[in-house]
Image 1 (spheres, rainbow, N blue to C red):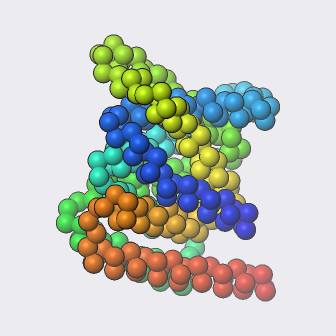
Image 2 (tube, rainbow, N blue to C red):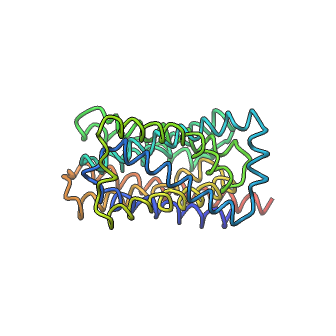
Length: 292
């Protein structure tokens, strides 16, 4: 559990500061950035798996049809999440991305109850209720249907559930997921070249090198997340996720200068209250379980 918690904290801190990285490519369309993100993630993970001498595991994955189907689902889900996130950051919706990842833990709890038969205790249900009220306040104050936030929450929530149900090494699993969407990314490259719409390949050399590093930037937090998902309950993993959107919220206010109303700040304060209540209830539950 402790090792899983450390991995989760590292992953969410990395994801929290990620808008700073994607903002470097404001002039590149989100779909093109995504295609590079997929290709260079595949290259980076291929090198990592080769160094780890895990290609035999990849062969076993390729021979398991049901596992391939599960990895295809998780690969498509995370690619969709990447696309929405990149578009939102580069179009001035960092606050809404923050809201989306605040919504995600609530969805994780629902998925855990429905699909994994996890049973939150009373304190955890209270935290969920507080967080739900906070999200409702934030959504109403936002003034319009938060489709970006909901899309991010649903895609990443389902991805977390898929990772929880796939018994696969983090490195091999991520390489398999990127391999699933690699043909789509390469096909998009061919389309852009044929249509004369390529943007990324015309970037200055230093910026293109930064884009190449998207493979590392993408893979590292996902590796930490995969290790955390294998060691923690889905509902607890979801609440640790508040680290990421809180960092995003701070960036949106102090770096990107997006407008944030007092009501929105109250909503975020309620969510942090829910996090404290949930964590306290989880610690007490763990102590009672050890005592018995």
